Image (tube, rainbow, N blue to C red):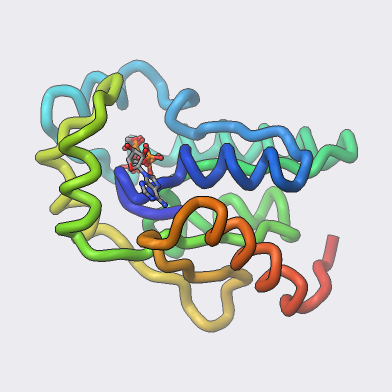
Length: 165
Ligand SMILES: Nc1ncnc2c1ncn2[C@@H]1O[C@H](COP(=O)(O)OP(=O)(O)O)[C@@H](O)[C@H]1O
Ligand SMILES: O=C(O)[C@H](O)[C@@H](O)[C@H](O)[C@H](O)COP(=O)(O)O
């Protein structure tokens, strides 16, 4: 989880490879209308995100039902969005890539994105609700290298309480 440009695709790919799990990028599952809205410079609202989150949640639930743990990149900016995912998959562990707006903005300036304009970064930070103490998650400093982040997550996962699923 994390704002646009925080490294979800990069770190999700690395975590999937490290753990031997399939990686799914939530960005690929946005309905076309959501992509067009963001491309036009408008942030998504709760109504826009609800069906997208449901697609992701159902996909996670289906993979787990087949016995396949997966890594998913999904902004998951609000607590209620995360709760929607957890409702389908109680064993979910969120990895929040945290960092300064300036660092993320600088990184975004060097990448080409299918639909996300850099101008939406402020709204992403405005919407972001960090992990709360009763959520199963890990906050990670996004200035670490991907290898360092994978090692950090691996160590932190070992310290988490057992799952209910
Ligand atoms: N830990 C990192 N260190 C350095 N650069 C990174 C790191 N994580 C991501 N990046 C770079 O930052 C940019 C945004 O990363 P990306 O994975 O596309 O973020 P998101 O999926 O959250 O939008 C990319 O150019 C990526 O190569
Ligand atoms: O909830 C949202 O507002 C979107 O999911 C957003 O957070 C996401 O960042 C975009 O899909 C762009 O994709 P990137 O995360 O790759 O910039």
